[in-house]
Image 1 (cartoon, rainbow, N blue to C red):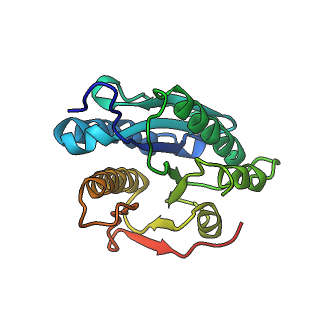
Image 2: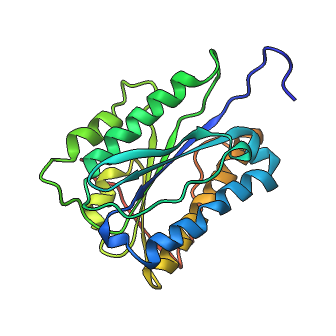
Length: 226
């Protein structure tokens, strides 16, 4: 346990989830059914629960923070609902604000690992607003808390867009119906959080982001410039 005045280094994780109209029905039901598995991992694996903090951000025409960065042992995963059209720019703006707010609310001097965003969408940006400036701001390397962005697409998600959003890791679900693909994506995210958190405690590992995405279930896509 930490002694008085000692602060654990934390691993900030932000789930950025598409809740636009195309997610209606089984896909959004699958999201709500699968989200508790992330909380369960924190409870069952003390190593992960000690280091990982999770936030849930949703987006459609606008973005919102459904769960601020939290120790899930003491928080409830939100229930998300369909809202409307798809605006990726709104997602990126709110994600940056969520990171800024979360870091600002940590106890002074809390050390953190590089934040990671897991971005999940089944469709394409349809707003007239150009999403690229908001993404450029989110990925700005001069910003101290610029996150790693991992994209997971399924359904009618556009490969090129997923590749442009991701910093290093982009994936497209291969098989099954959308609900099954959602479950596989959340499962991959859970395992990635677990493996990455564990690596921070293991001097024999590099302590960087580890992605658990089965090649039988996902096609890995090479990143593209914005």
